[in-house]
Image (tube, rainbow, N blue to C red; front, side, top):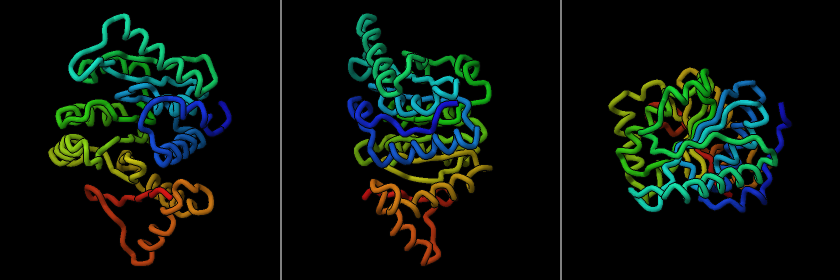
Length: 260
């Protein structure tokens, strides 16, 4: 098992994408906590783009000798896939980004398909115990989330975490539409949200909700002293504690983690 070192920031910053520093810092602490608890079974990202978030997951998971899988349609534009030649170049670009960030030669598994076309049995064979960290960041229309949400839940390990991107992003309203329609129609299935941070909504299985809620609250309480990028989280959550109120989402308490 590799050391619990934080990511090479300069290398990660060189990867094109929209990963906020707030989401990066919180995600790293989640991934490190999973490694510390020996809960790591595999990483999965739905929607890779250039590979920034996948590289972050790979940095912490590849040393554990578990699969790290990225799924992306590799589009030229909406509805049109890249030609074969350029698809290969796009995949090579992602592999190179992961290598630069992780500093190792072990490769992630890339699947160049729409998420709806992926062979679920193939995913299950790679990680029979489910995936302990899943990023949902593929299509941004309601119908995409109506498919990707249950796919992620079915693929999640018992102690795993799902990071849903852009649920509360005002410029991608279809994400919230699809996510909440599916969650309401299925009564949340076995999913419980526990934190929001840097444009991402974090969720887990109901049975471990209290664990991840307490973990997130601990990060919030230490942020002003230890994690400057999340510094505003401390004062905000202290105020919530003082008045004895916690925000909830879909019936579950949730910790808001805020930028400086």
